[in-house]
Image (cartoon, rainbow over all chains, first blue to last red; front, top):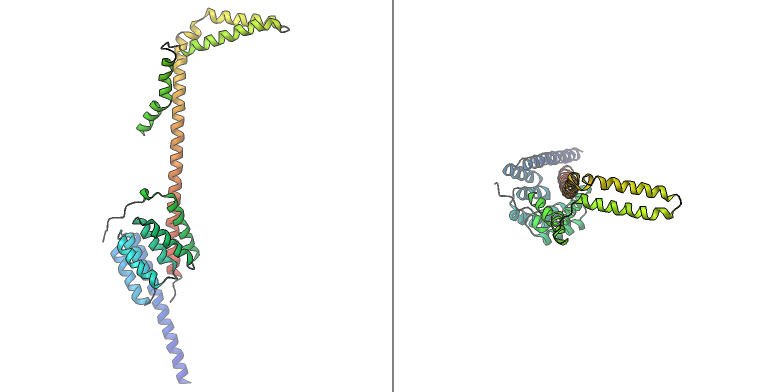
Amino acid sequence: MTDELSNDSTYENETRDRTSGLERARTELKRAYVQMGFGQFEEASESCSRAATMLGEHYLPETLRAAVLSASGRHREAIAALKVIRKKYPEQALPHLYFAEACFLSGRRRQAQRALNCAQDCETSTEEASFLERLRTLWNQIEPSEVPPPLEPMM
Amino acid sequence: MSNRIDNFRSGTTGAANKADPGERGGEEKPFGTFIKNAADGALKGIAAVAPILPGGQVVKMAADGLRGFTDGAPDQLGGANGEQMDKMWEMQEENQMFNLQYLQLQEELQADNRHFSTMSNLMKARHDTAKSAINNMHV
C-alpha cells in the first residue's frame, strides 16, 4: 500500500515536472519567436537552445532555430539544419515548410517545390495547410527574377 | 513615368497627329474648315432632296436659309473660332492620352494591391502556423 502510494506520487511528480518543463519550453519558444520578430536573432537562437534542453527530443526548438537562421539571411545554414530535422522527423510538416521557404529565398525553386510536396504528404494542421497554400500561391505569382536577394547576415 | 508620357506622345496619338498633314500632301486644313464644308454639303443635299418630299418646300427654305447664314459668316466656323476648335481637338486628344495613362496607372495599382494582399496573407499564415505549433506542442 505504501509502495503504491509512493509510486503514484512519483508518477504525479514526474508528470508535474514534465508539464512544467513543457510550459517553460513553450514560454522560451514564444520568447524566441518574439525576439526573432524584433531582429534579435542571437537571443532568439539562445531561447530555442534553452527550450531544446527542457524538451529533450523534439522537432520544434530545432525547427524554430533554423527559422531564425533563415530570417537572419543565413539560408545555407538554415537549409543544412532543416535537412537534418526533416530526416529525423519526416512526419512533421513544419520543417518541410521552413525548408521550402529557405530554398525558395535562396533561389532553389525546384527543391522548394519538392519540399512543399513533402509537407503536403504529411498530416498538417489547419494553419500549416493554409501556410502551404499561401506559399504555393505566392510562388506562382512571383517570377524567379523577382525573388528578393537573401538578407545580409546580421549575426 | 516621364518615359511613359513620352511614349504615349511619340508612340500613338502624337504620331498620328503629325502624320496627318503629310498624308494630305502638306495642305493643312483646320478642323473648323472641315466642319464648315461638311455642314454646307449636308445642307445642300437637304435642300436638293426636300422638294421631292411632301411639305419639303419649307425644309428647303430652311436649309437654304441656314446655308446663307454660314456663307454670310465664314469666320464663325473657319476663322478665329476654328482655331479654337482645333485647340479643342488637340485638348481632346490629350485628354484621351491622359485617360489611357490613368487606366494604366490604375492597373498597376491593382497589381500592387494584389501582391501586397498575397504577402500579407502569407505573413499571417506563417505567424499562425508558428503560434499554433508552439501552443499545441506536446511531449
